[in-house]
Picture (cartoon, rainbow, N blue to C red):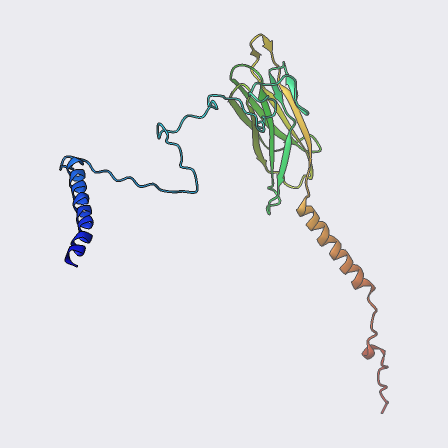
Length: 257
């Protein structure tokens, strides 16, 4: 029995010896890791979206559209009366303008009345515009005055200087004349005096006028008071007369003694 057990264990022990020998031989042949060796660990990350490709530089590239263009494709800018989009004076007068040698253009005379509680006061604001189509600054002047229905001067005349009117500029020239009183209908007048000569062109003064009408409130008030007084007087005269009872009674008779 002992021999059978020894014979049965012999192949098992031989297998263990051979296996140990092979393990020792493999461990001796494998390279050993030292302190200077780098041990790397790689991790694969699974993602459902593709990873972005690396860029060469973080600085954004300049746009291909040029920014040096000065053209404007949007809505054009509004132009000043008498000039085009570049500010160059246009040829020819605008509606209502008077041409002075093709170099100066004068508009019509406009007015605005301002009443006053003082019956002898009241003011008239007069204004017009002048446009310079010459290539140099221009100095000029304007005189304003007002006349009544009989040709008399109403208020105080005024003279306004127009200095350094630039090429292509349109300027409003205005003044205020007080003392309109209650004249109701007057005529506003203006004379624009340009330089005698601009370049080779001789210029002459231009006259503009405008009829002005305003409500004479003091006259209307007097008329209203007069009408109210007349109506009251007519009513007083037309009222029924009540007889005096004391006057109608007969005097008592005196009996003689």
